[in-house]
Length: 40
Length: 339
Image (cartoon, rainbow over all chains, first blue to last red; front, side):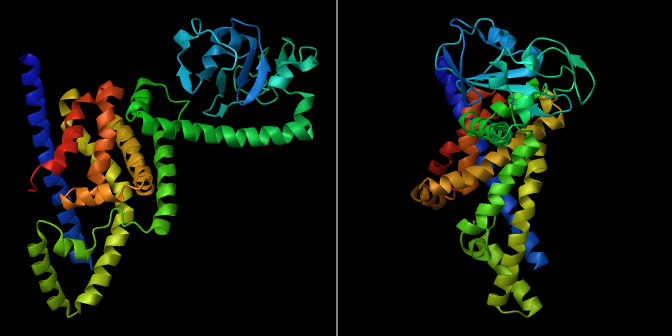
């Protein structure tokens, strides 16, 4: 049970981090967009 | 038994260990690294590693001042009758130190031999230097892809001579990137105006902002697109370099509790971006267009896929970085709904 729980916890944590990563990447692209918009 | 040392075949007595071989070659053990059949043999394992016929060895001799030499001069060593190859002391022409082996114990200069100036030796030596330098690059890049994270861990552990310096790895990767990128025409770090206006979650906002900007500047959309994409192109070239400290900073934040030096994160970031740059072309040539389209369909960008490809094996290859293994699990991103 401990094994299964720890796997589940890790998977959830990983999914959370992954989801956050997508937001970060899109935020990063948006920043690039703003930079290019204001300098062109 | 027959051994291949630095690409040359040589005969040795059976049952020879690595330590015995190094001694037989007249090299100082603390200035030599040995690679046996493409694997580095740790110095602690030299006494227990017995060589067998057909083994392929790379013996690297470190030179004071940061240089590296593969010179073994097997022919000269194999000629015990030659006056210069006996264990008689000799004076180094470079630093005037006295030594007995094939190389100066202080600066690593090779013991002079009259054979050095023969035309055959001269060209063999020149080619050897070139290809051995190459082999160091290949070894480093092979490990970068086969054991991601290993190079960073090795660098931090202190084992640095057999590999390229992280900055060199980054430099070579950049060369590959800048030479191949225009040929392939892939718009790597570039998010063109069309993509910003049509394919991002914030595209509606972006379109409004672009419309305002066009009105303010009194330009046509076509002209503005050209100007915007030109800026994006310039931006992308800068980003390759800027991404290194940014990634290092991100890692430092993620691992702030571990109190690591920023340099450690920088080493990892350099290796990672190098992997990323070269991996881009490996993936492009790997016929993975369909996979990429599929990932793109789910809002997954090219870089993210490579992040996973690099991070996932790290969980096994490099203990110092296990804490970021969570990120590796983002291979599951495509199955998640888009934010």
